[in-house]
Length: 176
Image (tube, rainbow, N blue to C red):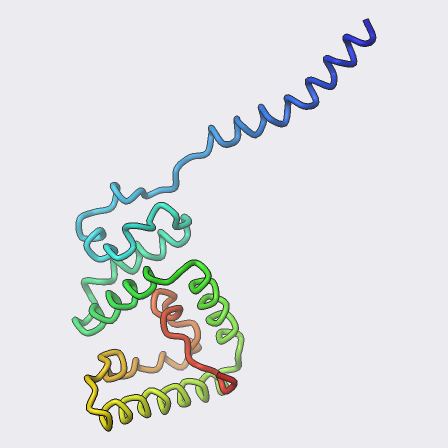
């Protein structure tokens, strides 16, 4: 009798975690909104993200949907820039995205004066690339010739610009 009871207790101890784990995975709800639940205009704006929409978290989906809602109010040049950056972001590997996010977070923590120095340094570097391409007679990279983004208002620090644009164009630091 004691042996049977001990066997039953051991079996229950081993089986319970397996049953509990299965019930948790079975009750997991899909994140919303699903791609199929987006409006036609949202799908059109967010098309570069379609292949990976299912892997995005709820917070990321909300951010992208908010961007899609602002999209019609953007100037055509801003719309083109957003589309290009979304496509570039979608092409990055998960490791590259993680590195870009970490870089963005580290830049965000810098004091405003240091961020402005980095922005100025980045602009000088970008202009040197344009001059170099012009000397070589190579076709100019459109991303180098588009006008720089306007500086954010004084009350919003430069590194707190919309997250949709920041990860795809981290500024080089003095050590790069």
